[in-house]
Every structure is written in structure tokens, then in C-alpha cells.
Image (cartoon, rainbow, N blue to C red; front, side, top):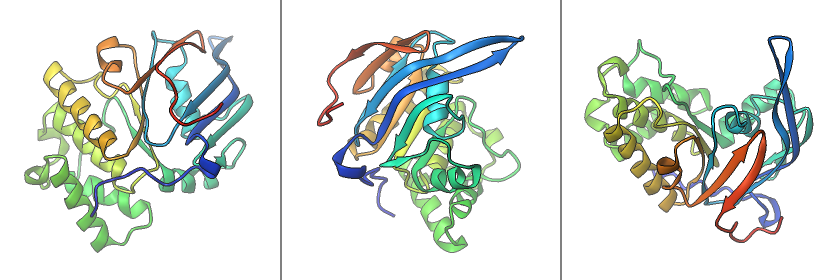
Length: 245
């Protein structure tokens, strides 16, 4: 298996991820919570972008709407040239299997099966037959330094190993876009550095990565930092290469 490239093109050379005028409001304790307030975001193919801000600023909601896991109240969301706004759940599930890999803060692994089977299952859910799914999973585990842990269950792995396993699972279907929600938040400093170094290696191979974090030292490892506050972008560090908004 070749290393993940993340290079399925966006339409007409435009942004791989494009949000325009996105608004999302939740109800909590009978009061509205305006998570996103007219958000405009572009991410180009091959970028590694960190969205940074305090808890409640809307950064995790941004990931959820980019993955089609939350609908939007207003605005449009485009991924890989497809407008995913207002699509039904079956369409979105198929789209995620083709285009989106998600890395969660708390791993979301299946504890009752081995590391290898966690990755194989994700590939088979993406439509890959058993034998090529296992071959692809073994290649990824080797690439991420987990080849000798393939037969272990997640509970016996270190935090850093479990997050690398979660990344392998997210990459097994060669996603166009890798989304990471506080991927070092449940790790000690050593495990966090392992994961960040892995993201840098994946980015160098061409994988598009969008990460959210509240920590400046974590965000600083990305190629571009977008700061959020109160559901809005308030500052961008660095230009968006090759994209005209």
C-alpha cells in the first residue's frame, strides 16, 4: 500500500474545504448557544491547518459540520468540490467513507478486538474486501510504528500507541481530508509529541489535515493557525496558498 496522499482534487482547483456564511445554534438548558456565527473558512489541498481557541469558541462544531455530522442552520459547506449542505444521512455516510478520516481526542477504538481488527473493520466498512483490507491495515500499522502491536487489544497499548492506532483507522480508506479533534488532549507530553510528529510526516506526504486545539504549542506545529472566538474567525497566521477566496 502506498502512503496516504490525500490528493483527490477539489473541483476547479478551488479549496478542498470551503465554508461560507455558516451559522449553527444549539439549545442548552433552554437557552440558545450560537456555536458558529457566519463562519467563512477555506482550506487548500495539502494544507495542515490548526483552528485554535478557548473551549466553547466553536472549533469542534466546525469539524462536525465539515464532516457532515452536524447540519448547519445557514450557509454552505463544500468538501472536495461537493456541496454537502442539506444532504441526507445515507449520502453523508457514503461521502465520509470516501473522503473523511476523523481522529478523536479519546480514541474511540473498539476494545474487544485487536489493533489490526480495528483498522480492518474500518476498511471493510468503507467497501474493501477482507483480504485487501487486512493487507492495507498491516501496511499502515507498519508505517505508524505499530506493526509489532497488531495482535494486541487497545487496552494494553500506551496512550500514544492508541492514538496512532486511531490515526491508522482514520487513514485506512485514504481520506481526502483528515480531521483531528484535540488529538493530543488525552495524552502525556511524550505521547502528544509522537502524534504531532506523525501529523507532520503525513502532511509532508501530501495529506490535508484540519486540527482543532486550545493549546498554542500544539497549534504551532501546523502550517497555518486560524484563531477562533465566539463562533467566528478572529485572526489567521499565514496566507492561504494558491486559493482565491
